Amino acid sequence: MDERPDMSVVVVCFRMERELPRTLLSLARPYQKLDPALRHEVIVIDNGSDRCPTAEDFASLNLDLTIRRCSIRSPSPVFALNEGLALARGDLIGAWIDGARLASPGLLAAVHAAAAGHDCPVIAPLNWQIGPQRQHFASATGYDQAEEDRIIANSGWPETPYRLFAASTCETQPGPSGPLLESNALFLRRTAWDRLGGYDTAFDEAGGGVANPDTLIRAAGLPGARLIRIVDEGTFHQFHGGVSTSDTLAATTEVQRASRKYYRLRGKPLQPLREPGILYRSHASQPESQSA
Image 1 (tube, rainbow, N blue to C red):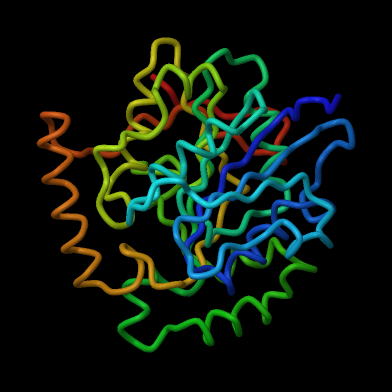
Image 2 (cartoon, rainbow, N blue to C red; image 1 turned 60 degrees about the vertical axis):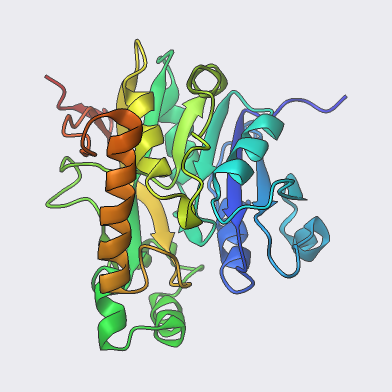
């Protein structure tokens, strides 16, 4: 009988022929610097691509990989995420609502270490966007996939992956303790995912609206929850025509519309988390707590 993995990563993809191979490479050994005793699996749920990828497409990665097509046809990724969460076998489970994000090499090890000693950790690695500024701004001045490919190549990725930080823009400003709206690599224990009921399927619009911020906010509000921000590892968004990252006007319009829906569902305005929680640095001897 196969042993259960220690960690699971659920990745949702839609027409990501260019981006998904990089994402999965970044989640596989030896790119991920993991203790040999630590077991992890990756579950990809395709949300209606013309061609669903297969595990055989990525056999060379030697990754514990499961790929399924979502059983529910929807422009929202929340149904796919919930199906992936149901399949996950690990105690610590990460949700990648956007499969176009590749990971830094120490991300999974940092998440696993940060969770130790916490019954209800809410682990939120910071989001980064490849390029000199937020991609919905950069696209107005010609930023596209070809330019991004050039940036990635010039950084030396994947051979020198940490150089990608210098070529990317952090979404959390003005620093790692700034207001936090979401994490594209939100990790919770299985028990916490069960208490949340996964992602709220009321967010059934294209891209999921603010389902990801909503999930982080609800998770941070669980009894006994401990917010932990991973500071020196993260995920990097690849430009692919996403709802909120491709065009400034479209992004602004979408955020406004999604915020109104959030207010209708939750009865309060959408607000980022302002409590820093624990700022976990995987290369430091001790995590830094800035909680009150």
